[in-house]
Length: 194
Image (cartoon, rainbow, N blue to C red; front, side, top):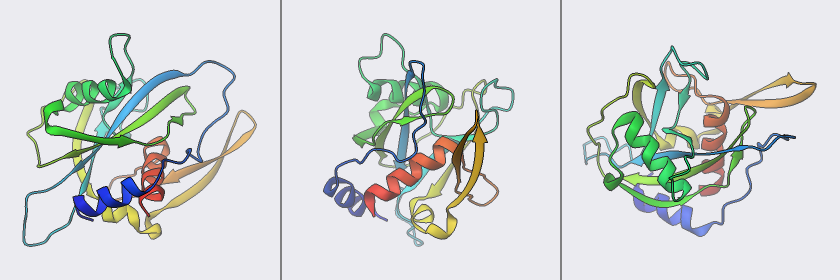
C-alpha cells in the first residue's frame, strides 16, 4: 500500500472505538505510542509503506523482549499525547520528530496493565538513521503494511485473568511474534483503512 492509498483510506473514515478494551476499577495512566509508517526509497520491488516496530530489551521489568511501537507514559511536561509519542520515539530509537509527519490517531486503547494508550500515526518519508537506547530497545525492524492486511496472519487465543476471559491477538511475521496491545492496535489500524 502506497502512502497516497493509505492517506486516502485513513482520511475517509472516522476512528472507531477500539473493540479491545479492558474494564478497570482504578484510574488509568496516560500513554502514547507512535505507529510510524516508513515510506521506503523507490526500489525495483515496491513493497509500499512499512510499519516500524521495536523489540524491547530483555532486561526490562515490564514486557521484556516483546515487540512494540516506540512510546510510553505521558510526562507532565508533554503538551499533548502527540508530543509524548514523538518524545518517546526520539528517546528510544533516535527518530527525529522533524522526520515524522503526523496524520492522525486511533482511538485510545486500555491495556490490561492499566494504561490508556493513544496510538499516534505518522509517516516517515524515508528510512532514517536510528540510534537505539539499549536500556529500552534491543532491535528495530520494519514490516510491510500489506502483511497485516491479510487476515490469514491474524490469530486469537482466549485466556483468563482475574476470572474474566480475554482475547489475546497475535500477528506473526517471520521470526517475530507480534501480540497483545501492539497486535490489537495494528488490527484497529487495519480495520480503519479497510
